Length: 241
Image (cartoon, rainbow, N blue to C red; front, side, top):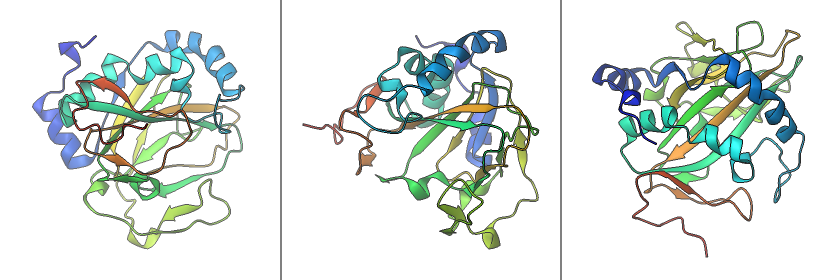
């Protein structure tokens, strides 16, 4: 259920347009999220019903993940920026066990089969995310230009990475979060996380939300459907027969 206290102020909206991100905000208490961690780990150890990537789109088969992805504290803030009509496209868990590789600097829309690329993401901390265990890092204002992406080096977790010749990392923000906190950012906001050089796991849940005029050209799995999480889908351009 929508809650007016979750609506963004004009100052917060301005920050999103100027800096490309907002937060952290609180979805639930650290204690409540810690209670959910065993079930989330169990989900990540189970096979998805219709595809092979266990970390991908588990909101489609587990109510807990759907509940987190569509929580009013997240959706109401998204609607404050992108308008009342919102569709849940994807969810992804990013699991960084000790020793996990660096995720390179990148802009998300570089990888995504959608047009136009109008997407807002929430990144929800399942575990504590600190500098020690490679928290999310972001470059304010980096969404204002498109960065060329090139083949990633072998020490990176992705196959492509932003070309460092075009990236200014002088004003990086470290988004340290407690379990149950989240941030919002858009499809061009440059972000990254270091290799996990600690002995502490770090799990984050990314929630990808689009507006109804966005066409999805490549679907993740046979049963994957977009879900209306706020307002309605008048265009119906992603209806699958």
